[in-house]
Amino acid sequence: MRLPILPADPGAGFPDPSRALRAPNGLLAAGGDLHPARLLDAYRHGIFPWYSEGEPVLWWSPDPRAVFEVASLRPPSRFGRTLRRSDWEVRVDTAFADVVRACATAPRPGQNGTWIGAAMAAAYQHLHRLGHAHSVEVFAGDRLVGGIYGVTIGRMFFGESMFSGVSGGSKAALLALARILAGWGWPLIDAQVENPHLRTLGAVLMPRPAFLRAVEELVALSAPAGSWQGRVAPFPARVLGLREA
Image: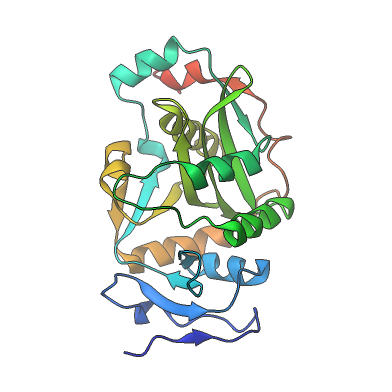
């Protein structure tokens, strides 16, 4: 099958995700750009960009899809004890660019370099200014020790990347995000492509048709737009280790 090439018009749309390649799993199209309208259209249809600098933009919709089910995310008992003794603080949307930068420079086992180049970072910072991209940050005093960022449409969170500056930082950020979303009744966090690290954090696999049905339903639901700072006050990470968190 010949890989479709997207036109310059960001409103031109995408091929049906069912047409994505089996190998490499989920590769759907190439080309186009990272214009906010194109990015949001992609996420609404379960598609995301993933490519290295020097390549054309590559668009993906893998089958199956890795997701986190918000209601089932709980800290393992040992990490829960660590969190309960922690002096870390969770904040939202206070250091988005710093989280993206840290994700771009974090070492990844089995990977050389990063897919978060300058164009990708700028595109998501643009979405952040538009109120469609958010970060959850874990601080030890003034030091950023973990974080996660992603895109939101309706009541769906599409995770993009996370990092740990110290052991457990990304895990705490993910648990904090799950706690926030659970309080709002958002059921899923998209984790895109399965890997061993995501499995240890609790990711499960969802067949692409089921994932796309869930996305279609969730992105159509209303949710307040804009920054999350006014919706989520900073809170101590130790609450993430409590049984009721």
